[in-house]
Image (cartoon, rainbow, N blue to C red):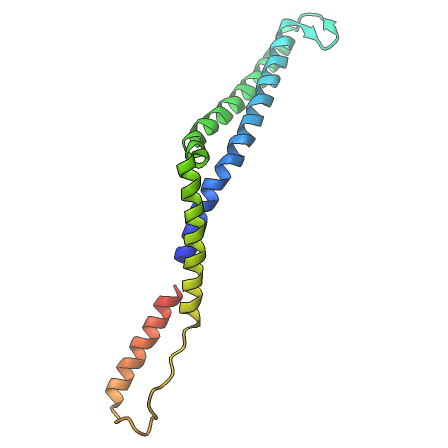
Length: 153
């Protein structure tokens, strides 16, 4: 993974925490409304006013749905708590400046990586002028190919 890709990932994580917190706040509200509706069902209150009290089987089904709703609410609440420190950082003045600097660093890093990828070496002397040493040439070619494979990683 290139350095620019790592920086890009950090920026993505910091920026996505705002969306995540908003998403989980919305899920939290929906699960709380669902929970309230299920409590009303347990009380025997229908949408249209007073209704009949639910039977034992109906109460068991409602309780199972309530348990699932409470579990979804807990997950949403936990995710909001997990993302809050990052959200505070991103919304803070210092954090937003840091994020902007990180974007600038990403641009500069991409430029440098492109320059390094496009780099070409040209011979400075003719092959006829150089003394011939097959062992040296072989080891140099191995070093160059190894260096090229390391740079591409």
